[in-house]
Length: 89
Image 1 (cartoon, rainbow, N blue to C red):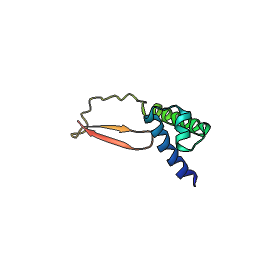
Image 2: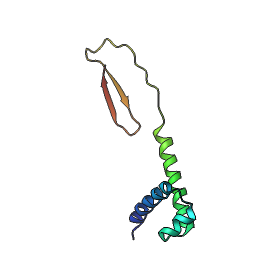
Image 3: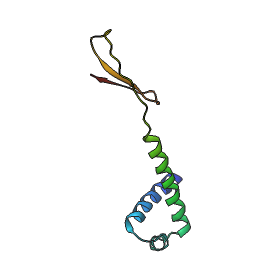
């Protein structure tokens, strides 16, 4: 099994584990896994989730000033990945 398909399978199992309400030991036994393997993936995916949450929750302040130079007015937002968003005002 490739690493990608193994990761996909374990994501599904970890999701099922969280929904099940079972202990890690009981869930792992019912799925033919070792408790250590389940524990590893629960921790790994929890860290990934925390990293994504922290990255997606950062805001940067924007200042909107009066501009009489242009007849069409908009707010321009520059994102760190290079994307620009124009919002008409």
